[in-house]
Image 1 (cartoon, rainbow, N blue to C red):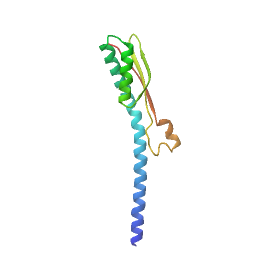
Image 2 (cartoon, helix red, strand yellow):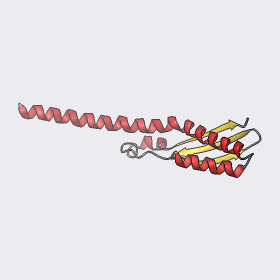
Image 3 (cartoon, rainbow, N blue to C red):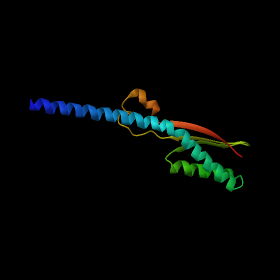
Length: 121
């Protein structure tokens, strides 16, 4: 009787740990995709601010965008300044999750890429 009680508690604990791991990992992957747009906007705004401060210096705006992306843990994959817009593309690196690296259908979702066109005003 007592061993059945401990076995039941052990099984429930194991199931709870596995469920928590799966939910946590999937949540981590989904959060990465949700945050990529905000990260692109922060990098673009920093580039625009620096572009205006330096009286239209493309090189200084690019350097500011690279630094902001690195500070936030992103990778700047594209940068362009046109007559009307600053275009920034960023990639958030893959999260190190246990389940996501082992489940084949989650692998495409491990990293997130986003692009933003911010008007120059």
